[in-house]
Each structure stands twice: as structure tokens, then as C-alpha cells.
Length: 460
Image (cartoon, rainbow, N blue to C red; front, top):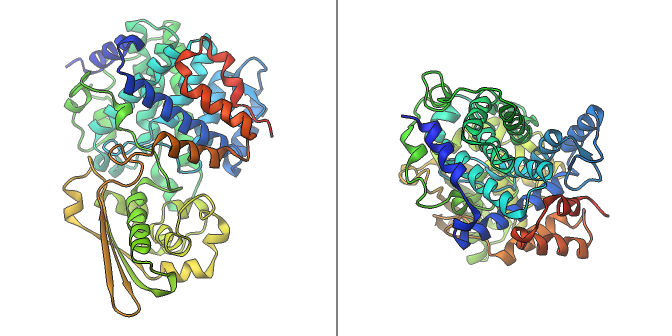
């Protein structure tokens, strides 16, 4: 079938001059979102542990910028740190049909490779577009339920291929070298969902490791190291080993008709993507009917079947989160804070809220059910249903087809800037942040990314 080779050939042919304006604009939009979440993620406890490791491995004053800090490190370790920080908040971009977060694996590798090569902004955009294309197509081909069913986290497993292609394109690898980079990446595809068992930090590591490994794959391939050319479709390849229901045809389906940077969404709520639509529905019902938290008696949420083992079960854990990670993946917690505080932002996902008796009391009123009607449109759509019953016996309901942030219901540039400004304000001064935003919106005008990336270092 030559699936891997054909995908590589397509990515090698991506040229800035041929990209539609909306693809270029969307890539810069997603890059700004990445900067925002990575900068705020720099002050999270799990990220600080990663920085400690990178520091001990040895910093490099001429290496890659670690966003939101004053540190530079060897490029592969800068990518490792930046991918980890950007995934720590559960606010990074997401692709519904692939059920993964492409930006946090692709962008760290693309920026590190751009710094390494002194690449211009246009070349960075080419690499990012190619990286998204690979990551998303692989996520779709695995099928989310089949991949999750084997215990894998697709952001890490698919992300390493996207990172390898992005880095390969920016570093100027030829066809054979990029094909080998894909093959090498396949032996580094990792990411276990077992973090759900006890609120561990390992999910946050997955995209950082993917970015790091993608750079290693590209650098090895550039030096002549050979990787298998059938890593995706082969008998012992990625699709066979990582999913019980993969479909190789989805990798090349519609190749070149459009670009998957246009189909990635932005998260407004600081939690798992499977919780976004239910939270939107709760906020809509509460606001439209002017309900107060003390009026709520019972909440019933219709949840996608694939999301159940991630945000609903085991029920004992999901109703009794013990950490922020547990809370990020607890639907009852997300519902409770949405009702009590009218939002589900970083300010709600704290240990204080996790341990709050009021939040616990509200969580006890939340139940989740499977709804076959919702699953009929999954994974192209991630809908949810909401029913809230009040103490006086009245019932209010809503169905959310496209939660805020989906491509069909996107954040505007202005709304994205508001999100990034809120996230990055503890890291950058207002004038510094305005410069980051302005130059990101004109990233394709940068002649050398090494003159741009220092702007992402902390100043306050």
C-alpha cells in the first residue's frame, strides 16, 4: 500500500506559497494558543520537576528557549520541557475525530527545529502544517475507541510521528531521510492511560516526550540512520500494534483536499475534552433559566461512550477526586464547579476546590448516562446532553452539538487573545505580551525564528 511513503511524499511537498490564507492564519492562531498554555504551564508543580531534570542534564546558553522561563537547553530537551508544560493545564488544542492534542507535540518540535536551523517563519508554518496532518490522520486511522481500549494515549503515540515530520521538514531532510525519521519515530511511540488510576502526572509528559523523540528521529535520519519504511501499515507496524480497530485507508483519505490545522479546536475550560460539551450545556441551562446553585437538586449528563472510562468511571474515584489531575478527568467535579462558580477555569481546578465540602455536596447530585443518540455522530462530533432538575421539581435541559472552541463554534481571534492574556499575565508584562501576540500574528514575516523565540522567555 505504501501508506507511510505516500504520506511522507505529501508532507515533503507542502509549500508555504501553496497554502490557503486560512491555513496560514489558523496555524498562527494555534501557535498563539500554544504559547499561552505553555507559558502558564511553566509555573505548575509537575513542570518544575521537569525543569529540574533538564537543568541537571545540562543547560546550553545557545540552545532552545524554554517558554516562560529564563532557561535554554539542548534543543531536544527544550522540546521535552515545552511539550510537558503546555499539556499540564488541560487547556491545549484538540482534534475531535482523532481524539488527541496535536499542538503540544508538534509545536515544541517545530520551534526547537526552527531555532536549530535558523528557519524563517514560513518554513516553521510548513513544518507545523505537516506535523498536524500526520498526527491527526494517524489518530483517525487508529480509531479512538480501539486505541484507548489498548491503554494508549493518542497525543503521545501519534504525536511523535507529527513531531518527527515537522522537525524533518524544517531541518531540510530529503524524502528518504524523512521516511526513515517516521520509521524511527515508530519505535518511540509511547503514552499510557494508566495515569487515570491515581492522578499521576505522566499524561503531561507524553507530548513533551513525543516532541523530544521526534527531534531525535529527525536528527538520526539526517545522519543516515535507517528506519522501517512501512512503519504505519506493516505487519508489525503502528496500526496493527496500537489499535484493535485501525483503518489504514483513513491515513490517505482526502489527502491534499484540505488541511487538518483547520479542524483542530481550542479549549475554553481547563479540563479533559470529553467534559467540554457537558460543561457548556450546564452553563447554558443555568444562565438561560437564571438558576442559582442552591436550587439544583439533580443533574443528569449524557456522555459519549468512549468518554466514560476517562471521565465517568470508576465512579468512586470520579466522585472523590484526590488531586488536580483527578479533578481534570472527573465529570462530576467539572459539573459541580460549573454550577457553583459559573465557570471551569484554572481557578476552579485547584486542591482547595477538590477538598471543598460544597463542591463535594454538588458532585453527589451529578449522574452520567450513556446516550446512543450522541454516539451516532462520534467522533466527528462530540455532543452532550444536560438535564437539571430543581428542588421544586422543574426540569431544564439542553443538548450541545458543538461546544465552544470547536471549529464549527470557534473562539474568535479576540477571544483567543483574551484566553492567552489571562493565562500569560503572571509570566509577561502587558507590553511584552502584546509584542508576543503581534509578532505571532505575523509569524510568517520572521526571517529567523532565533530572533523571535527569545521573546517567549519570562520577564516578570
